[in-house]
Image 1: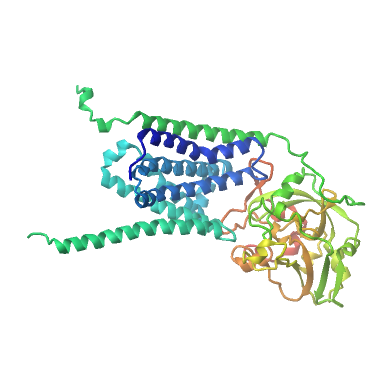
Image 2: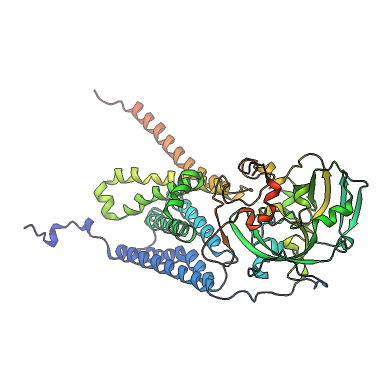
Length: 213
Length: 320
């Protein structure tokens, strides 16, 4: 299929960028208009957490959607989406560090060691950190495409840690975290199937054209 | 010195203008929204919301003040009725208010059974007349780490127990919430083991601080807060305060309680507020008072030291 003209893609990128800022904008607007309810910090924590996981899943769906639709240009949105996952993840972490714990290092260390949902959440953020840092074109070149790609597979583990973080913190009613989990499993299963099919295909080709001794 | 001429730099190394501009926009946008968020919070913290009291129920007559009330400023009516754990309606704290609007609280009766001289059923309006209505402004500490100050109106639980005439062998009181899946949407799903049940030891139930609440801010209790009748035990975590009670039973064995059945390692029978006994998943040492920005230390028995003698000789680390 023909990709859309360059001008369209650029306009789309701006639109996507603004939409990605939407959740933060809504949260900010509500913050100024008494719209965050009785426990604003709780709302900010939950909202930023929800959007972190959502952006991780959207980022992970770029490749399947691109391949299934044949729209190769979609890859050009992936970095932005991934960086927004990191952006919301960092807001989420800062809410905890600043608004929940008031930079009380001792209390946070205690939490990280003792509370497995905190451990899982921090793990998810730490796994995103090198990806955000090496998201630039310069770093792709410095690492080389193959190594860069290997490194960026950390996103699978980050998203898994994020879903586990969500499952472990819920008191009752696991519907929401399990929905995220199911989507993540589907997105990873797609990759596994593609990988397995490639291997089978390669093996067949090898049989057909034996390597010359 | 090596100075690269422009032609030495491969074009692949030059970041396109659109890319670095979008990166710059991203950072600026991120910083701006972060700052705006903090600003919004600051404004909210410093804006007065104590005038949010709004009419909802029917004014209760003859409410007398109580020496058990705290002098701390009460949480706004708006927050008390819009931030609730009422799992029968929703697991989201902001939804029960809307979902409980049409909940029917009349006709309503409460059964008294188990180890009593004679089982009976009492109409809610008869229960309201068992003792003078008292205003009890209590601290309310949720097991999740937030707290409020709530101006309940209610009657001492002891007065209700006395009229039920329990047998001398009765050691525990068990409470049960109404089962009304047609009105309480989550009772159609197995979120918790319905109906919600709670319990107290007899001496806890007879303590003068324990009340059955029927009102809030001098008016009939809003549905979202457990109308028409709910338990309030201010030295225990909020979930002990069972709502919409239809049954009170007396037993000689410790009755099951809903959250204990759900997660026995997280919620015990006693569930006394205890800053020294962490929930397995979070600390109980501090709490966020709704309306306040910084957390405050949680007090043993939620500051109600007069109940301490009830637990003499009981290991509160094991009996959480």
